[in-house]
Structure formats: C-alpha cells, structure tokens
Image (cartoon, rainbow, N blue to C red; front, side, top):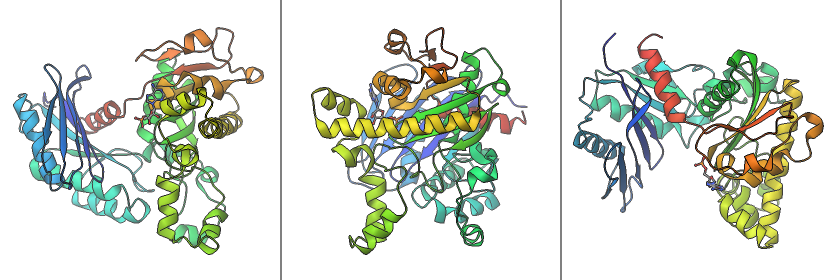
Length: 401
Ligand code: AMP
C-alpha cells in the first residue's frame, strides 16, 4: 500500500469533460471543473480550485486529448499535477457496462475492447467514455485507471425485472434487456439514506428518486437494486427534461409509417425534444413551476404529467418492495424542488407516506428528513455525489479493500 490517497474522477461526455480531484483521506475536493464544447470554436474550461478564485479559459479544444491536457495544466498550476506520486488512480464514469461489467473494473486493453463492444447499446455515451480513458492512459500509463459503470448497481435486478417480454432469442441475440442507469447515484443515495436512518443498508428498503435533467427511480431492497425505471437505454421510465420516458412502442411505428419520420428523427424527437421540453417548451423545473404558478396551462400540464408518472413508479416500487422504509429524493429537481416532492407524496397517508410542509421547505445541502414524525415511511432529501462514489469505488479497487 502506497500513501497515494488522491483520485481524479473523469466524466467524459461527447463534447465535454467533467473532473474532480478528491482526497480519499477526508473526501475533500482539491479541485473540480468542466471543459465544454470540445471540438467547437468556442471551447471553455472552468476550473475551481479548493482555495482561491475559479478560473476560466476560453479557447479551442480540438479533441478530448487537448481538453485533458488543459485540465492537467490547470491541476499542475495548483500543485496537483497528474505526475504527482499522491495520485492513486483515475476513476472513469462509463455509462454502459452491459452484462459483463457489474463492478468497478481495472482498465486493461481487453476491458477497453469489451467496453467498445458495447457501443451499439450506448452509441451516445460509451465512445466519449472510451476516449476519456484512452487519453488519461496516455498521460499516465503507469497509473491504475478504473472504469465505474452506470449500469453496474442494477445488475442485481432479478431476471423477471431485467427482461422485456419479447422473443427471447431475438432479445438475447441483440442484448436487448433492461440495464438501468444512474447506478452510481442510486447506490450512493440508497446507502446515504440508510446512514440517515442510522441503519445498515442491508436492513432497509428504499425507493430512490433521482430527478435531474435525466431522471430515474429505483427500488433498493437491503442495499440491492431490485428494479429501476431506465431500460436498454436511458430513455425508458420517468418524464425527463427532454426525454419522453415510457411510451407505447407503437408510437414509433405510427410516427414512422403515418407521420413519415425516419428512425433517426424519432430517436431525436424522443431523446431531445420530448419530456418537459416537448410538453411546454421548457426543460428547467424552476421555469416550469414559475410559469405554472402564473397560470400557464402548458407548464401546468407538463408539471402534472411529470408528477403523475413519478407517482406511478412510486406506487409500483412500493408493491415491488412490499415494505418501504424510506423514499429518497435526489439530483437537481429532487434536491431543490419542494413542490415536486410535495406533489409526488400527496394523499398517500394510507401508505404511510407524508411530507411535512415546513421540513420540506427547508433549503440545505445536507441529507435531511422531510416526513412528519408519524410517517411510517421516512421521506428524505439526500444529495447525490456520483463523483465521490466513483472515487471511493476506484480507490477501494486499487487498494484491494
Ligand atoms: P441535474 O441533472 O441533477 O443537474 O439537475 C438539473 C435540473 O435540476 C435542472 O434542469 C432543473 O430542472 C432542476 N433544478 C435545479 N435547481 C432547481 C431549483 N432550485 N428548483 C427546481 N428545479 C431545479
């Protein structure tokens, strides 16, 4: 065991890279930042050191290699260069791990080949994640690179929850099944919720509602995921910022055959122009609530549709779990939008679910209970921290913990 205690977490998207350097001794953020618009004419790097003012660089980053080199320079300027012996590992968020990767994995050539083989089921995400790993490897070939998969936490779903009821041979041939996403968040939040209750994760059943621009729900029984709302891709499930969530697959045939839309156009419609945006022209919940309060009918419909779907999953996962100890709201909407939490739980006293209006209106970055004392189910707001979870999993793997 070395005394290297830092982990650099990289989350490489198609045109962006988010990063955090975390010290595992105390979980402190030593630096964090974001490179945006990689490959475009107006690239931007925003770097936030632990101490001192945030810095911004506006320049062209032709590719992920250039972006990561610029990140390395920013870190070096803070005395935190990638050549530091204190760096224990680089942890990478990888969106799709398929059925093979159900735990954090040390990156080797063979592992990279496998992640590449999963591109057909994650064409928007895995290529960028792979690029991030390749560039990081080239910068520090000697350092352990760990892939942490968004799908991994959901690998414990029973087969009947992971299957679509379609021809088994066709499904298996094309690896069509429900994988689920946001796994690192669901894992982190379900554990943090158990901590908030003063219990071991193995003792509690939790429904986690990850409501950000993307959104997903999961049913976690004794620390193990038993169902989640996203499926083969992150399109299934809840109404999201720009994604439709559940639709009858017949909608696709209809839009193609009758509407004349191509498959690519339908893909774009359901992923980028649907959800809250499609219903009312806005995908930011703050703006939607403001408009709805002002009497805007489209915004009200978008809010109500969002809540209706959320309640269907809440009720569904209650039945899946049988006994629910806690409901945890997390991510941008879940952590900040008190009216969403109130509406999601309204009228569910018979199920032991209630929200205390005063507790619900408290604004805080801490995990907190918002249900009244008489509530059988603890309703809580539990801020997610995917970067810390990735860092912890990477560090544990490197140190054989
Ligand atoms: P995330 O993907 O977790 O970063 O969440 C982003 C989303 O959170 C935004 O698109 C907003 O809809 C929502 N959000 C952020 N802050 C607030 C807030 N104060 N009230 C309501 N919604 C918020």
